[in-house]
Length: 120
Image (cartoon, rainbow, N blue to C red; front, side, top):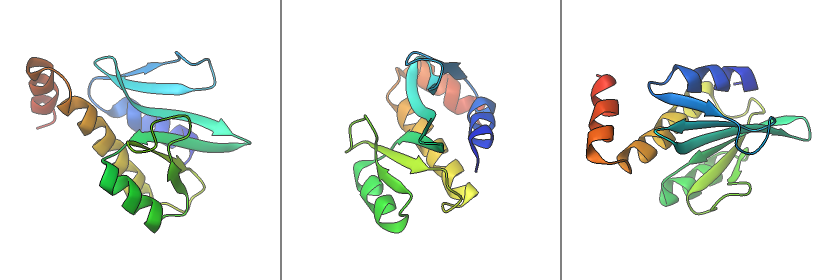
C-alpha cells in the first residue's frame, strides 16, 4: 500500500476524523477524538503508526522486517509499518482495523455501541 491508499482506507472507516495536530506533514486518524493511526513520511518513505496489542506487536515485528516499534510512541502498544511494499495490503488493512477496534473498545459504552453497531 502507498501513502494515498492508506489515507483513503482510513477515511472510509465509519466515524474516522482526519486531523493535523502535529503539523501538516502528519496525517492523524481518530475515532471519537482518540488516535488510531498516524501517517507520515521519513526520508522519503511513507510510514504508518498503529496501535497494537503488546503480544501481537512483538509477533508482527518478528514476521515482517518492515514493522518496527512505534516511532515516537509507546513501543509496547504501537508499531510503525514502513510502507515499502513488503507487508501485504490485506495485512496492513487488518492492522488498521485492529488499531481502530482497540480504540473503540476503550470508548464509553454508548459511543462504542454506536460505532460497533454501524459496522454490521
